[in-house]
Length: 68
Image (cartoon, rainbow, N blue to C red; front, side, top):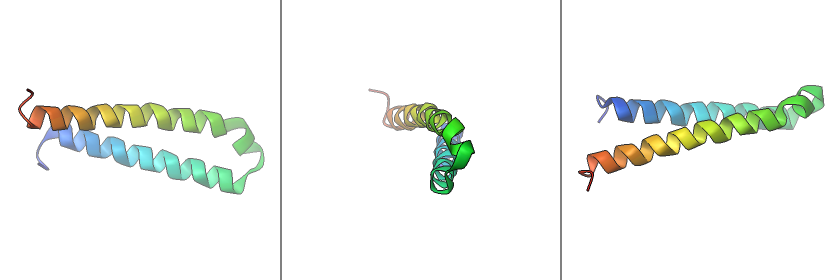
């Protein structure tokens, strides 16, 4: 499974989502001007990357189940 490129892309996408989420939570906790300007953008980026991650996970599961 670790040699499967689709699994690796899905795992990387999940870690990117985690990184964006932690960054966003950190800016929320800190507050300030940066948070006011960029909080919505950060969460929109998270949603977009999360969508890609879910699509990759579903594609991986579907293709490995035989695609039927």
